[in-house]
Length: 581
Image (cartoon, rainbow, N blue to C red; front, side, top):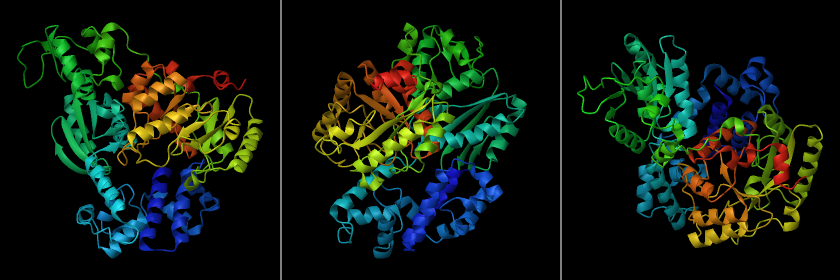
């Protein structure tokens, strides 16, 4: 079991104990342990094997025993028993925005509510208004949260779906009878939320049944829906549906293409094939109007790759991320498809946190992790004083952090830690540090962290004022959305983008998998306006730096090239851009 999974379980234990009314220090110990495990730079499995886990500060003997049990067996009896003591609906209720452990405890004890349906009924009947700590406004917010939860009940974050898909794909790729395999569908197109998983496998027909049976028997499969001659459908343990198709090697590029493209993209491609007197489906090209045997086309144009399919239609290869019928076919015909940014183009990043605010790792630990990725610079942007909930820094701690950054930078000749700050955009549009303090930073990220219920006009004015501040380098997570949890606040996004592009203010692509904000649908518009972007992981732990890859996926989906993104620049180029040299 990896450290992310271990940390999640420890955190959930802390939450369940909180609902039970356990000692606050015991609850906090589990939450702290989760943060410590997440922030470990050493390999957790190695720490457990050597017994060194007991020497990690903040991990006592009891916790180290539980972590050892999790890592070595993949289960924890204490957690299983604790979870079994709660009604199953409790865990679903805690997915509702604004319904934390304390509220769940009140709902259980006061109103005997144990399911989301019961909670919705109680809200509709107004029964929460009389409960201490709730009230009419809270009741309205809970109803809105329930509606959002139901709307997204069958959707999963890209990162979660991809991780589940990769466990299957890697197992398939290890099999000698699998000739080729790939994840298709919306995961391959890098959609921010995913409804299901599609995997395509190339193999000889004689081996198809064995491959499908092995897939259905995978340890992450919770339930088999159907298992046929060429396709099996299952539900994985995270609740997502997964289909695996086995096709003949000659059909593989066609199947991969068909099951990757969005419906609208595939319709456009099939229509284009018809103009060439061809019919195209997941099996191959056939002459238009030709009868098909058993649903399979009589292949008249063999294609070894997807590139061959597009070339047959007079197109250059369209990257999977762009296959949304969003102008990519016309651009391919015109030879004007962008050369999309690659993960290897990233040379550093700007929006990261340390123990100076709500991060789990020190300045030195974050910088060493960035260097291990091959980066040339790391921008630290801890929270400012208005974010008290996130241990935001006041002016005194800012000076202390900047001195420490100077000291750590003395260790490097080929790497630089940049002094940044994530300041709060207050309701008035003012920032929570004075210009005198802001001028001491190498760059400034300005973000909204409160007052989400403002009108569109007021929120737009609020952010426009921050955009116009001469010390603001970039706007963080523009829309404030949390995927599957919270919609973005009311905001005239195009007006903000227009102003930022005109002002030369960057809008970040926040690469945290729960945000992916700026949305890819807005990236292309901003690019056309001349916007410069930064892809930032909003990392709070060393492993979070790798989340940049999700931001690169969003950037690619938004048609962005290397030249559109600041952190593809070298350290010297960034220093010149920030006027540091």
